[in-house]
Image 1: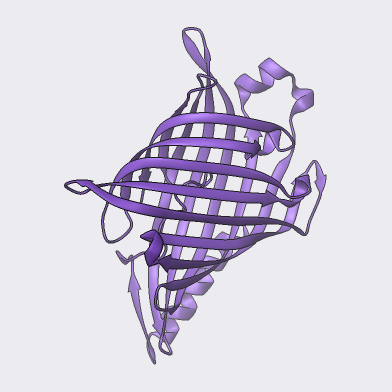
Image 2: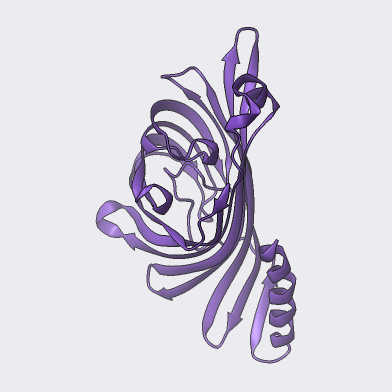
Length: 270
């Protein structure tokens, strides 16, 4: 995939520059941008029970800061991320696995002002029905869903919120839902705030994430979350949260369907 071809080239270039006017730290601890808390497609470990359907939604993945490059008075953090999301539906004494949605990203985060960071990056996602769902629904409903995209975001700390806001877009340079739909955009906005001390290292927070999808005439996928978390200065966090989601499906196999769910889940951002 393109993102994995870009990474070795990028590292080679920065290491060459390190001989002159730059400084490169490999595998740094720093992160400039926290997880987009309420988003249902972030890179993290998660396990949530849907209160309205009885199913479970799980994510297995995370983000690895790979290189911190200091060059010409700027810093750039290179991060490699990957996550697979799946839905488990109760079927009596066992669970049926419905989908496997893969996300992979390489991002470049650049602080440009006090409390403001820009992100650019490249990524790929493909969404699949797995064997249980194919057998249950019939192979005729299986979609070929895949996106290769570029992403552009700005994140800004807001003291009044005791948190941050973010906004940006994904440009789907290659987008397949059985046929090519290249050039569509996905717009994403959100916020995380509150961060009210509870006890010890625990705090109460609230978060919102809104996505507007070009493939469904910019219909929205909305997520609202409130929870308790413990976090450190590097934005690593463990959270217990209630999430209300409504609007267009985020799972590509059901992209044109609307859904409303409530869930309680554990989330680990790292």
